[in-house]
Image (tube, rainbow, N blue to C red; front, side, top):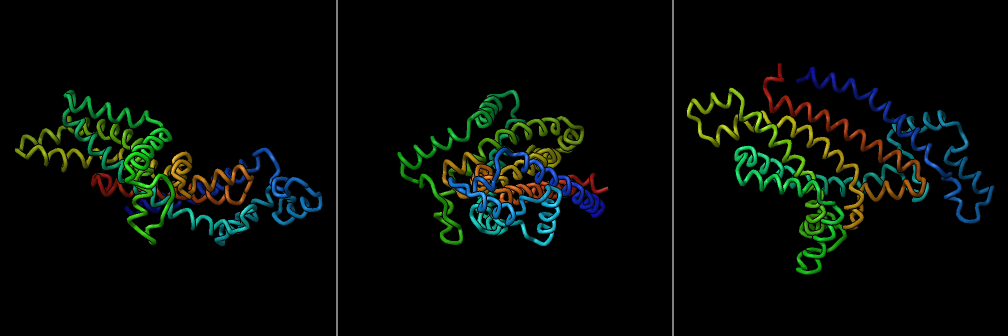
Length: 313
């Protein structure tokens, strides 16, 4: 296991370097001049020149990149041009919100997706299998914004059980925090659950048709033990991969869902930064997201080894 982890860690440096160059380069390809946006309607040439000097926009792009990388390595992601706050502070404010929503969404997705996928594989070709496939297809096909609006109309407006929008930190009131995030978590988890269900079903069918499963049944083991202990453990490998990728997607921010439910997460932060040409915020948030993706891939590799003992060799 240590060999696998060390190999993956050695790949982090060139990967992050390439990602940083890509982030910085593509950001400067966006149309418009951030100095003109910040200068306001009057656009005084003196003010514009001062803004360019202050944020080093008058320097060559390679020089700007080196200065940015030097700051990142020292823990400084820069300062927001619009909000006049350090980007690292903005990330610290928004990341817990998105992290809570992502964790709750993945719990919903894994519980629904894995459970329905196993049931569909065990009862394949029967009525339950067809019903589960319809549910999974509906989850994949349903737009998140439509499902979110329908849930607000039903649970918030008609029944009055849950707040329609807003966010409360779990450190302030965990019950209210759960009430404000359960609907967006279900909306995000519902679409991911359909994908996980399809992958779990396919992997479980392949595992149930394997020789070791037939051998386990021939030994007289119960069907529950065969399915849960032998087949499911070997079928979890693609689910781990998919779960890591989807979790990384959730951490990058679910823009539409956060907008519908007024969740102040990464999605709203990066959308506002792009529209305002706030280079530092876009670069900082995307860099954090890319680093998270790489870390999740490393955790997925470790998960393979823990689930499948044959990979430990």
